[in-house]
Length: 390
Figure (cartoon, helix red, strand yellow):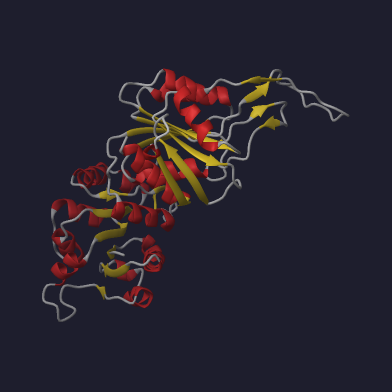
């Protein structure tokens, strides 16, 4: 695995860096830590050394190494600053080097991962926003803070993100960097619901997990992601460019078509209802011996997107089947003018693992098949890699 140098600066979220160090170690990384003087007011070096089994540093002059800032900078494959206060961000932008943390940042030549966490007013201050923009321009990575109740009592953006998101960012940046910077992607996910009456609807068992995994991977790799979704079992990543909830097929079609022409890629993972009741009852239907519903076809969102697809646009579909997987998926690929289709047999709803066959053209060449299997977050990156190669 990789050598991770964890910088902990002096904010109330410093205690969360202890768990981050533990999770990084469990993931197989070697983790060394630098604490600023103010960070030591919140946490102690022994917290990190006990968890990581590696050295913890607080000063340029604490041990026999005459140049620890150079030694540590050269050792690290990735520097993670968590939490990153407004102070350490400003120091890095302006090249200040007055302690071990700032001198090591200056000596480290690879991109860094910043996890800003602070009061909402400090985060939104033009100076801080300008500094963060400069870090991004220089090639560093930023995982935005969460909006919520802050330790200071304020409500707003500035909350330290869940460490699972930090871990996902670390893994993504080590393997892929920001290779999708500037690409605009629209993803659909989840299940649509077609109302029968105010209490009942026609839907399916989709949880949206695959679409969420793809959205997360795209965003962490630098893409500007718009997620249009139906019902899902999990909340969408907080750092997506835009999220739009669409309960039924007609609303999803409207929102997707409205945005489609601005997108470089469109990835349709949503499980859309094929039929809708011909009559939608405004009053709850009373229980009786028998109920007969007349169903009519819903609009075909993927067919519509294929008919208006731009010359350089990439359109990706999904096909879940119970049998004849390859033949049916290939027919869908050709009929709907797709660039690639991700085909899978119906499996247990909500599973965290998946098996998918990627089909890139409508002929029978085995070269146009790619088999993927594993955890959905891993398969998501593999799907993205294949889209890049189209």
